[in-house]
Image (tube, rainbow, N blue to C red):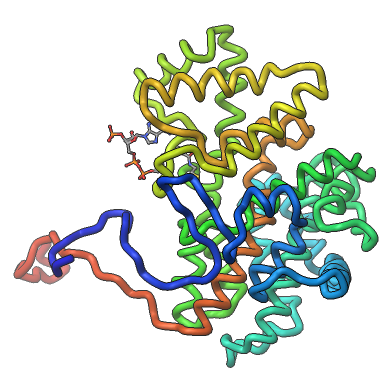
Length: 381
Ligand SMILES: CC(C)(COP(=O)(O)OP(=O)(O)OC[C@H]1O[C@@H](n2cnc3c(N)ncnc32)[C@H](O)[C@@H]1OP(=O)(O)O)[C@@H](O)C(=O)NCCC(=O)NCCS
């Protein structure tokens, strides 16, 4: 690369080293710390994956029990945080905006937050990361219930992270299939190399700003439709297809002719099908079959066939997470917040890694504006 090269969108640019996760875009393989995502999705819980990302190895049973207890002990919201959640629900704030504000609010109630004089204090940062990861699902479930006119449900320490979220959302213990599916979705979304939101967390951390500030940057970045926001747009698209009464392939052909992007397709790194889409596609099919109605799955596969033949684009994680969540009865505008409550684990891990070997992230832009303009005083313009 010469000084004059401009890598728009930093495509193909390697900016750091990481031991957290790796995407092989040609093979369609994703690993977290060396473990294949398919094995982790099928065999490991979200708590095991958090431990793996934060501490480097899978926990033993005894360590996992301790870790689960520590996570569960941190789930409750302080009264002040809950009153902010109530106000956001009263204002009907957009869910991702609400989560961004809640993430920021959590800093004010964190007993380690005063430690900003030393943002690289590893032990304090792990405690802060654990608190945010444990509390965000509680805040999200409370937010959704409050805006629907229901009171929040307190977390249950005897349920694991995934099952407890569904319990707090719906007010009843989820059935084992729902709990297992949701846990798998959390595992799948936990980390993904230097995606845009993770990178924005790292940029913020690289200035030696505190962990909460880095997480607030990341939540804002995840909300966009080219990133986490795509899963909601997939479901809106499928509903449009349904209402149009057109064949899904015809609907997509018309949409592409109108110059629309099809949410849930394409990826900066994968050239083949995202392995997470393979796993969630199977789940989506299973859920449809269990309910005796595979309409949404069938629409999805018809669209996948058309886009892959006509555009050579493969589905990404958002394509099948949409119908998976929909068939679990989760409100559409909560899909991106759910992505957030999983990815926060990956953000924490990357911020810890950034602090450990920090260098300020500060690229340059090639200036293309005018030079040598003559200054004209205000009164003479
Ligand atoms: C993810 C995404 C932003 C990656 O973008 P990128 O690497 O910057 O690729 P580009 O936007 O430059 O797209 C390359 C080409 O593929 C096309 N393309 C990419 N994704 C497309 C999509 N979902 N629908 C239609 N066309 C698409 C672009 O129009 C472009 O075609 P052109 O060269 O003829 O203009 C892009 O694929 C996208 O917008 N997908 C839909 C949103 C989404 O699902 N996001 C979640 C990602 S996990």
